[in-house]
Image (cartoon, rainbow, N blue to C red; front, side, top):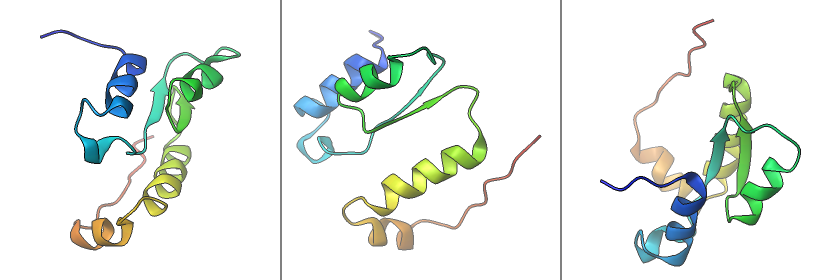
Length: 90
């Protein structure tokens, strides 16, 4: 199976190769690249947001809430999914 990086995956999603209904799905980069300019590179590639590793659980939760609650049909998605807890294992 051919592998691809997040930039190529985003390009494929945004171009419709992952299905037309997925073109506008929220994409959050989770990356070890935390150098100056990396966030801008991700956003320019078509990603919606960016988090650098190591991931802080609260930051991840905040980003997920931001993008999931603003997504089309988010109320339907939230209502149809089982409730889950984000537990910090530190």
